[in-house]
Length: 388
Image 1 (cartoon, one colour):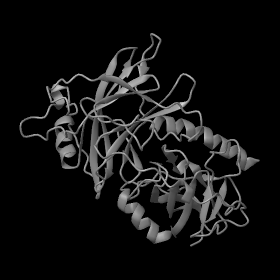
Image 2 (cartoon, helix red, strand yellow; image 1 turned 60 degrees about the vertical axis):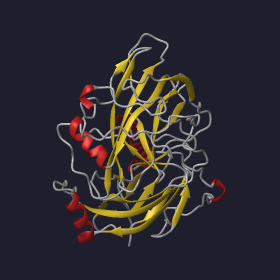
Image 3 (spheres, helix red, strand yellow; image 1 turned 90 degrees about the vertical axis):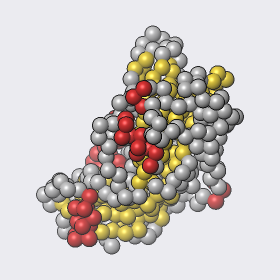
Image 4 (cartoon, helix red, strand yellow; image 1 turned 45 degrees about the horizontal axis):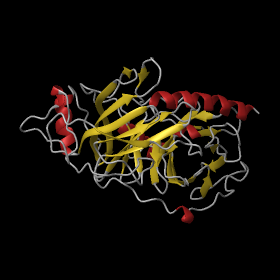
């Protein structure tokens, strides 16, 4: 009972944290309302040919003669924007919940970096193997009241590796995509993302809740070849029972299949091996709490959803369960490579480091994983052994 109550409190904290940080863990459930494309075309403020997508509208971000020019692509017929297999074409307007949304312009790679230098007073150095992707988005309110409504922050970049990347607050740009508007009013601004350098095709996933509190996702193409093929759902393995019993936890290399994901701990690093990786990325890493030590688990995650929608995976799904005492939440540490806090579409595979705080001299401590956050059916919960 103590563990269940602790997990319940952790679940409540998780939902609040995800809402604030745009890492909302959104289930792929039935009843989701599909967004619909609208017929009207956006105006063409730069006088581009009508078969080219729209360029930036603000003087502050308008490219000069030597600056990178807006990437141009056909704005012809696209999909209906209801999922990643049929995103709407760039320049077209898509209705998502109570918003009309369109992507006006985008840059990636060197062009994004050069453009950011004109949009921001301070541009962060990129980690190795990463590139900036920036997109200018216009959202018009269709709320049928007279209230101000903030534009959603949970906008995700979906890349051709089937991974989603959350918008970043830094570098701060002069025209960010933020603000509050009433019915008929619009917000236009830029969002900044980081994605692997080798990715080339991108979509924007714009999400919000409709009047019935159904989550609605709209998929808008940035690049002409942004559409992703559907996952081969028939090839996905069925749920298994591995790790259900804490007396028989999943071992290193075992794959637990539950809650729409296949999860494998492939490696555990402790002591000097873990410290070298942690200290290289965290110049001011917090000290371990008394009686605990930092460790790293290498985790492999495959998304197994049956619908062509985003699936969210996060560190908050995990805690360390000591032999005795309360569960230990995962510490916040900057780690190299992909983040475990990720959005994936079915078929995507993620490999990342999971930071752990382990009780010292407790060889029986387990890693607890619950994709339901401790709410509702507890059957998906699983246990992993932490001994190398």
